[in-house]
Length: 239
Image (cartoon, rainbow, N blue to C red; front, side, top):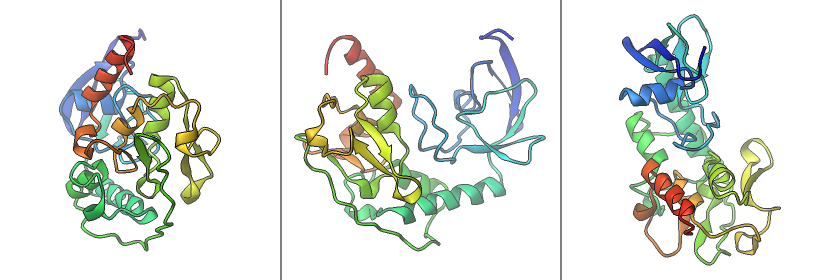
Protein backbone atom coordinates (compact mmCIF):
# COMPACT_ATOMS: atom_id res chain seq x y z
CA UNK A 1 0.00 0.00 0.00
CA UNK A 2 1.29 3.44 -0.97
CA UNK A 3 1.80 6.15 1.65
CA UNK A 4 -1.13 8.28 0.49
CA UNK A 5 -3.57 5.55 -0.56
CA UNK A 6 -7.17 6.30 0.40
CA UNK A 7 -8.75 4.05 3.02
CA UNK A 8 -12.45 3.70 3.76
CA UNK A 9 -13.65 2.73 7.22
CA UNK A 10 -16.67 3.16 9.46
CA UNK A 11 -16.64 5.27 12.62
CA UNK A 12 -19.81 5.23 14.73
CA UNK A 13 -21.79 4.00 11.75
CA UNK A 14 -20.48 6.77 9.48
CA UNK A 15 -18.46 5.88 6.40
CA UNK A 16 -15.29 7.98 6.33
CA UNK A 17 -12.05 8.06 4.38
CA UNK A 18 -8.46 8.77 5.28
CA UNK A 19 -4.90 8.19 4.13
CA UNK A 20 -2.90 5.10 4.97
CA UNK A 21 -0.70 7.23 7.24
CA UNK A 22 -3.65 8.53 9.30
CA UNK A 23 -4.66 7.33 12.74
CA UNK A 24 -8.18 6.73 14.00
CA UNK A 25 -8.03 9.96 15.99
CA UNK A 26 -6.87 12.15 13.12
CA UNK A 27 -9.42 10.60 10.77
CA UNK A 28 -12.25 11.02 13.26
CA UNK A 29 -11.38 14.65 13.94
CA UNK A 30 -11.11 15.46 10.24
CA UNK A 31 -14.72 14.30 9.93
CA UNK A 32 -15.96 16.18 13.01
CA UNK A 33 -16.19 13.12 15.26
CA UNK A 34 -15.26 13.86 18.87
CA UNK A 35 -12.86 11.58 20.74
CA UNK A 36 -11.56 12.91 24.08
CA UNK A 37 -7.81 13.11 24.67
CA UNK A 38 -5.29 14.91 26.89
CA UNK A 39 -1.79 13.76 25.94
CA UNK A 40 -2.37 14.27 22.20
CA UNK A 41 -1.41 17.60 20.63
CA UNK A 42 -1.50 18.40 16.94
CA UNK A 43 2.05 18.57 15.55
CA UNK A 44 3.69 16.44 18.26
CA UNK A 45 4.45 12.72 18.17
CA UNK A 46 1.50 10.84 19.74
CA UNK A 47 2.34 9.35 23.12
CA UNK A 48 -0.76 7.25 23.81
CA UNK A 49 -0.27 7.76 27.53
CA UNK A 50 -3.52 9.25 28.84
CA UNK A 51 -5.69 6.48 27.28
CA UNK A 52 -8.73 8.78 27.11
CA UNK A 53 -8.92 8.32 23.35
CA UNK A 54 -9.38 4.54 23.50
CA UNK A 55 -11.99 3.16 21.11
CA UNK A 56 -13.58 -0.18 20.32
CA UNK A 57 -12.63 -1.91 17.06
CA UNK A 58 -14.86 -4.63 15.73
CA UNK A 59 -13.20 -8.02 16.00
CA UNK A 60 -11.00 -7.05 18.94
CA UNK A 61 -11.90 -7.44 22.60
CA UNK A 62 -9.33 -4.88 23.77
CA UNK A 63 -9.62 -1.11 23.71
CA UNK A 64 -7.22 0.66 21.34
CA UNK A 65 -5.75 4.16 21.66
CA UNK A 66 -7.09 6.17 18.71
CA UNK A 67 -4.06 8.50 18.62
CA UNK A 68 -1.58 5.72 17.83
CA UNK A 69 -3.73 3.16 16.00
CA UNK A 70 -3.53 3.45 12.20
CA UNK A 71 -6.71 3.13 10.18
CA UNK A 72 -7.34 0.06 8.06
CA UNK A 73 -9.55 -0.71 5.09
CA UNK A 74 -12.99 -1.84 6.24
CA UNK A 75 -12.24 -1.13 9.89
CA UNK A 76 -15.34 -0.56 12.04
CA UNK A 77 -14.73 1.73 15.00
CA UNK A 78 -16.95 2.72 17.92
CA UNK A 79 -15.97 5.88 19.81
CA UNK A 80 -18.95 6.16 22.16
CA UNK A 81 -20.36 3.33 24.28
CA UNK A 82 -21.26 2.65 27.91
CA UNK A 83 -18.01 0.71 28.30
CA UNK A 84 -15.92 3.57 26.96
CA UNK A 85 -17.82 6.10 29.05
CA UNK A 86 -17.09 4.18 32.27
CA UNK A 87 -13.45 3.79 31.33
CA UNK A 88 -12.94 7.46 30.48
CA UNK A 89 -14.70 8.68 33.61
CA UNK A 90 -12.48 6.43 35.73
CA UNK A 91 -9.36 7.90 34.07
CA UNK A 92 -10.50 11.47 34.77
CA UNK A 93 -11.25 10.60 38.39
CA UNK A 94 -7.85 8.96 38.82
CA UNK A 95 -6.12 12.03 37.37
CA UNK A 96 -7.96 14.27 39.82
CA UNK A 97 -7.14 11.99 42.75
CA UNK A 98 -3.45 11.56 41.90
CA UNK A 99 -2.48 15.22 42.35
CA UNK A 100 -4.08 18.38 43.75
CA UNK A 101 -6.63 19.82 41.34
CA UNK A 102 -8.70 22.40 43.20
CA UNK A 103 -10.14 24.32 40.27
CA UNK A 104 -11.35 27.35 42.24
CA UNK A 105 -7.80 28.34 43.23
CA UNK A 106 -6.00 27.23 40.06
CA UNK A 107 -4.50 29.66 37.58
CA UNK A 108 -5.95 27.52 34.75
CA UNK A 109 -9.52 27.63 36.03
CA UNK A 110 -11.80 28.12 33.03
CA UNK A 111 -9.15 27.19 30.47
CA UNK A 112 -8.05 23.77 31.75
CA UNK A 113 -8.50 20.79 29.45
CA UNK A 114 -8.80 18.36 32.38
CA UNK A 115 -11.56 20.49 33.87
CA UNK A 116 -13.30 20.77 30.49
CA UNK A 117 -13.23 17.03 29.82
CA UNK A 118 -14.53 16.32 33.31
CA UNK A 119 -17.55 18.47 32.47
CA UNK A 120 -18.01 16.95 29.01
CA UNK A 121 -17.75 13.37 30.29
CA UNK A 122 -20.06 14.02 33.24
CA UNK A 123 -17.54 13.57 36.05
CA UNK A 124 -19.14 15.33 39.02
CA UNK A 125 -17.32 13.55 41.84
CA UNK A 126 -14.16 11.54 42.49
CA UNK A 127 -14.63 8.01 43.81
CA UNK A 128 -10.99 7.45 44.70
CA UNK A 129 -9.15 8.77 47.76
CA UNK A 130 -6.93 11.73 46.97
CA UNK A 131 -3.18 11.26 47.23
CA UNK A 132 -2.29 14.96 47.30
CA UNK A 133 1.51 14.67 47.64
CA UNK A 134 1.95 18.47 48.19
CA UNK A 135 4.97 18.81 45.92
CA UNK A 136 7.03 22.04 46.06
CA UNK A 137 6.57 24.59 43.28
CA UNK A 138 9.54 25.54 41.14
CA UNK A 139 9.51 29.34 40.82
CA UNK A 140 13.21 29.65 40.02
CA UNK A 141 12.66 30.62 36.38
CA UNK A 142 12.50 34.35 35.63
CA UNK A 143 9.31 34.05 33.58
CA UNK A 144 7.59 30.74 34.30
CA UNK A 145 6.42 28.49 37.14
CA UNK A 146 6.25 24.71 37.39
CA UNK A 147 3.53 23.39 39.71
CA UNK A 148 3.90 19.58 39.80
CA UNK A 149 0.75 19.33 41.91
CA UNK A 150 -1.30 20.12 38.79
CA UNK A 151 0.71 17.94 36.40
CA UNK A 152 -1.07 15.02 34.69
CA UNK A 153 2.12 13.67 33.08
CA UNK A 154 0.82 14.07 29.53
CA UNK A 155 4.44 14.82 28.47
CA UNK A 156 3.36 17.50 26.01
CA UNK A 157 6.04 19.77 27.48
CA UNK A 158 8.69 17.08 27.07
CA UNK A 159 7.78 16.46 23.45
CA UNK A 160 7.38 20.08 22.35
CA UNK A 161 10.73 20.97 23.96
CA UNK A 162 12.49 18.08 22.23
CA UNK A 163 10.68 17.94 18.89
CA UNK A 164 9.93 21.61 18.18
CA UNK A 165 12.39 23.72 20.18
CA UNK A 166 15.16 21.09 20.13
CA UNK A 167 16.29 21.97 23.66
CA UNK A 168 15.48 18.67 25.43
CA UNK A 169 15.13 20.49 28.75
CA UNK A 170 12.23 18.44 30.13
CA UNK A 171 12.14 14.77 31.08
CA UNK A 172 10.37 12.42 33.48
CA UNK A 173 11.87 10.90 36.62
CA UNK A 174 10.61 7.99 38.73
CA UNK A 175 7.72 5.69 37.81
CA UNK A 176 4.00 5.33 38.42
CA UNK A 177 2.38 7.80 40.81
CA UNK A 178 5.85 9.01 41.82
CA UNK A 179 6.66 10.25 38.31
CA UNK A 180 7.52 13.92 37.96
CA UNK A 181 8.53 16.29 35.20
CA UNK A 182 12.08 17.55 35.73
CA UNK A 183 14.38 20.07 34.08
CA UNK A 184 17.74 18.78 32.84
CA UNK A 185 19.20 16.44 35.46
CA UNK A 186 16.59 17.28 38.09
CA UNK A 187 17.71 20.82 38.84
CA UNK A 188 15.68 24.00 39.44
CA UNK A 189 14.22 25.23 36.15
CA UNK A 190 15.88 28.60 36.55
CA UNK A 191 19.31 26.95 36.64
CA UNK A 192 18.80 25.05 33.39
CA UNK A 193 21.50 25.61 30.79
CA UNK A 194 19.37 24.13 28.00
CA UNK A 195 16.11 26.08 28.45
CA UNK A 196 15.74 28.82 25.83
CA UNK A 197 12.84 30.54 27.60
CA UNK A 198 10.66 30.12 24.49
CA UNK A 199 7.52 29.27 26.48
CA UNK A 200 6.35 26.50 24.17
CA UNK A 201 5.99 24.09 27.08
CA UNK A 202 3.74 26.57 28.87
CA UNK A 203 1.57 27.01 25.79
CA UNK A 204 0.94 23.29 25.29
CA UNK A 205 0.32 22.42 28.95
CA UNK A 206 -3.33 21.32 29.31
CA UNK A 207 -3.59 22.21 33.02
CA UNK A 208 -2.07 24.75 35.41
CA UNK A 209 1.16 22.80 35.84
CA UNK A 210 3.14 25.27 33.74
CA UNK A 211 2.23 28.92 33.65
CA UNK A 212 3.69 32.35 33.03
CA UNK A 213 4.40 34.82 35.79
CA UNK A 214 3.48 37.74 33.54
CA UNK A 215 0.39 36.69 31.62
CA UNK A 216 -2.98 35.19 32.48
CA UNK A 217 -3.63 31.52 31.79
CA UNK A 218 -6.40 32.45 29.34
CA UNK A 219 -3.78 34.12 27.13
CA UNK A 220 -1.64 30.99 26.92
CA UNK A 221 -4.29 28.28 26.51
CA UNK A 222 -2.93 25.52 24.26
CA UNK A 223 -4.40 25.30 20.76
CA UNK A 224 -3.09 23.87 17.48
CA UNK A 225 -3.01 27.47 16.15
CA UNK A 226 -0.62 28.50 18.90
CA UNK A 227 1.75 25.69 17.96
CA UNK A 228 1.58 26.66 14.29
CA UNK A 229 2.41 30.22 15.28
CA UNK A 230 5.31 29.03 17.41
CA UNK A 231 6.65 26.99 14.53
CA UNK A 232 6.36 30.01 12.24
CA UNK A 233 8.24 32.16 14.74
CA UNK A 234 10.96 29.52 15.01
CA UNK A 235 11.34 29.42 11.23
CA UNK A 236 11.65 33.20 11.16
CA UNK A 237 14.32 33.13 13.86
CA UNK A 238 12.17 34.55 16.66
CA UNK A 239 11.99 33.38 20.26
